[in-house]
Length: 126
Image 1 (cartoon, helix red, strand yellow):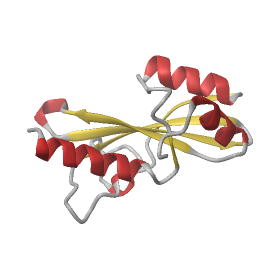
Image 2 (tube, rainbow, N blue to C red):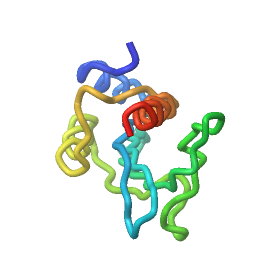
Image 3 (cartoon, helix red, strand yellow):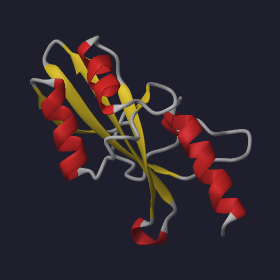
Image 4 (cartoon, rainbow, N blue to C red):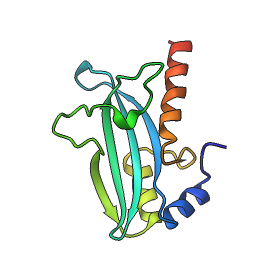
């Protein structure tokens, strides 16, 4: 099972593990891009990062964490949205403000598999 249940997503954050979610395609200024969000625990709390990257993926290059940012001034890790004191607050903000789906969180690194599924669906159902 790839996706974390809401309880498992919360537990992962409480254990200090990062979780991620692929949010889909965007097209600012007629450019093909992708959005994904990461919730990363630290001593300060849970940091929410939003990444908006160019869709430069190929059949052999699927690591969206390595794609260049749409905004050349943005760091590759993504834009820091907020640092919240608890995992519950971070999940709630990501779901409310970034349209993250509480049933689609994945462990760190699995967001690339989500992108691969997106590519497959896009080529099968243009």
